[in-house]
Image (cartoon, rainbow over all chains, first blue to last red; front, side):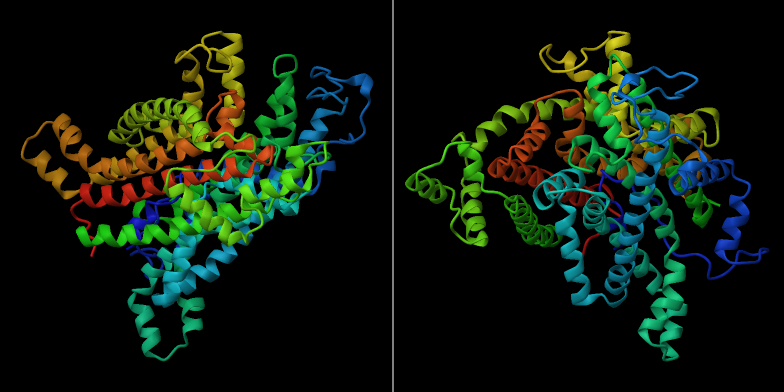
Amino acid sequence: MSDRDRERLPTNLPAPVAIPPEPAGLEPAVGREGSLYADAWRQLRRRPMFIVSGILIVILALMAVWPGLFTRADPRLCDLADSLLRPSRLHWFGTDVQGCDYYARTIWGARVSITIGVLVTAASTLIALVLGSIAGYYGGIVDTVIARITDIWFAIPTILGGIVILRSIFSTRGLLQVSLVLIVLGWPTMLRLVRSSVMATKEMDYVDSARALGVRNFRIIRRHIMPNAVAPVIVYATITVGVIISAEAALSFLGVGLQLPAISWGLMISVAQNRILTAPHLLLFPGLFLSVTVFSFILMGDALRDALDPRLR
Amino acid sequence: MGRYLTRRLLQFIPVFFGATLLIFVMVWAIPGDPIAALAGDRVLPDSVREQIRDRYNLDDPLLVQYGKYMGGVFQGDFGDDFRGRPVTDLLAQRLPITVRLALLAFGFEVVLGIIAGILAGVRKGGFIDNLVLVSTLVVIAIPIFVLGFMAQLLLGVRFGWFPVSGVQRGLHGYLLPAMVLGSVSLAYIARLTRTSLIENLRADYVRTATAKGLSRRRVVGIHTFRNSMIPVVTFLAIDLGSLMGGAIITETVFNIPGLGRAVFEGVQRQEGTVVVGIVTFLVVVYMVANLLVDVLYAVLDPRIRYE
């Protein structure tokens, strides 16, 4: 069953993540103690990939919560006389057309990206966990209905769907609207993952024995299936944060995402594209920050997968 | 196999109608009167308004509009844009450009991706392996429009190897956008090939082949390679589908008048018929690619039997 589903993750999202064929953690490996997660943590602490991406993510999170820590300049206090300065000691990243300090703007841009990335991922994971465990656990008609609805959403490419919805339904587009659209388009992929993971866990003997003991369905799902089915979801969710940040930037770049005066890397790049020859620094800095952000989340996801997938040990 | 195919085709039908209806509803939810937009500053006489509304079935309920539209689609009529030009004309004009771009990108990613994947996979943990792993991660992380601008700036402007934008200079102009468009999939293909190869190299039949004295070249090149290609080939089929529709950003960056560009302009100009027509077409392409993947899967891997 799940083999087929697994191969059909959309290509505009990250490549099919290797899903553990069966959840681990039910029996600790011989000679070791602790759960899958304790094992994973022990392994992760020694991985440079994990450490590097962890540090980067902490810095980015700080930037999003507390931009004043990195810059004292006000990103909205601009002097037209300073328009389009090259990077200098005074303005590390130069200034934009309006004469705003580009370093301050780039730092402040982290807030939108991180907020949207985390918000959208959290919401679509929640939807997927609820619907996916219902579909995967109960099967039958409920599963069929949920799976068919997912198929329909799935047939619509993310960016294409995003453009159409954002242009047609909302007259003003802020952080909330863009997040909402990305949630609406993002949950089906996650749902498939949860569903196939739950279906695999459901077949385990300990689930059977719990049922034989008369444990209620809800408790089985919560106590026995979820903890064991959630490992691939954690990996995929981490990567998704990066993918969503990239998608938000792409939509803003195309002019259907956030609108000025919002400060967002995608918007900055969109404005910069007309001056790519005369002021390449306007493109370079937000592009660099955006790439590093996406990179750290994908790297983190990769490190987590290596640690959580017992097949690779 | 036959039964599986029939079932799969039957499932195709509700998904097809669901997806096209969804798009139809979303596009026509655009606020504002499209006819007023068409007329611009002038006020249209009521009779003309009526005629236009009638021609585009704008007075029917949305579901009936959709029904009439789909009836046309099945006869090869995707509707007209507001200047009376059939959307099929637009499709015929733009499609070859997108197909050319997609095929070039596809060729690029298949050849380089598989080679990189094999080189990385045969020596797991070696220098090439780490190089491929890190560089693919970097490529995946850089958003495609940033990558596009970088390529434009460096290879187009600074070094002058490629035309910076547009397609006036023939196939040469497609090369750079195709490489940018294919780069992300290239990274996925390389990683997928590598993982699959490493997994298969651990299989019993590989040990048997080595034990009976076959050369390493033959073991990897024939036995393992063919088995490792199964997930890659299925990925490729989906990818070809999404390359066709996913080129909006690349076409924007490089100013290529393809299908993605046409959809985007349609949305900007509120030309619902154009958007619905092209998106419907793209969704069909995407779905057929998905269907093809499922069938391919069954054909390529006899271990999988669909009941």
